[in-house]
Image 1 (cartoon, each protein chain N blue to C red):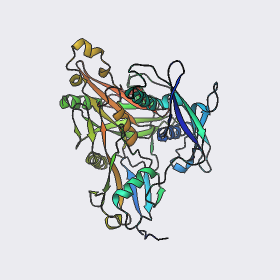
Image 2: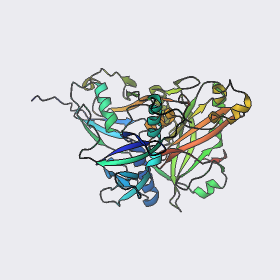
Image 3: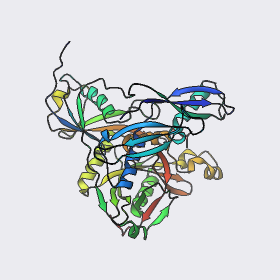
Image 4: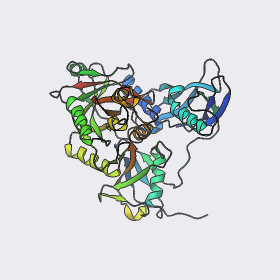
Length: 342
Length: 101
């Protein structure tokens, strides 16, 4: 992949006074995966080979022009296949970096906590590829596995499903059995003040009539060999070994569609009165920066899911997140009755 | 100029999900597993750091022997042709970063 531009973030006070220019080393992988899934949905063709991802290029801002960018474009051009481009807005994609930079400016005393910070992205041409070569030289050839799509009629599944959350037009449909949610609720309650979690497994489907792609969770595998407390849950290497073993034993050709974990807000907010707990943002489903980093590390594919079970005074509530435009966002899902199987 | 002897063995490396798979060959005979893992993180486009900027720890699990390879082991002594190695990180989730809902 080529990227001939150095992207930077310009940080400004609300009156436009420049504060700092921060060089970006963007993680393009989520955007590339979103482009890849978009191409599959539009053209019906899964391009797995990394060499098909040709370039990331800036989209110059319509008003202020170069070097300021409104976003960037990922171009996929498989040999012998049709080109596909996907555009991504810079404001959302670089928001996390801007928040980090703002926190640093507060720490340095340049800004006060609570001050408003503006940011805009820019890009400057450069002559070298931004990816460093590894210190150890060896040959590595990508051998991407095929993406298995099962055929299933989406409408017939949706007929018996209930919707949770607000559906976004850009999202693929996600179906989850009631049993899986119930297990996550039970496991969350049993864990008490500690965080717990698991891996969501299932299949990707293509509707033979509409060619729409959708994901169906078939089960959750409780995460074992984890370490954690009320504020942290570490998935260890042994956790992944256990999950891979469980998948192999099930022999249903399921893939890891995502993961879930609990937020024991009931423990975090115990010192607060009940009425304040109910209004607290901790009582809503959210992904922390650790959660986002874990998802990026383990589940970069654009169809993958992160389920958060928030345990409050009022019970355990699910919230699902998925990739949209290369950023993890809250998303809807459909709950299937237990007599419907994949 | 000095020449480095290379392993003849070719083996597979995948991420946990199995969605990223590499055929690896031509590893220097004196390379350690730790050096190989560091090189693979870049080639597989895996993140090197966690949310706090701390390095993520990736373990190399050798399926044939059902064990984690030690970072100090020589790749040439630990791996054979046809082996499959899975990179498995220790990675944190949770509400530790509570200031940013």
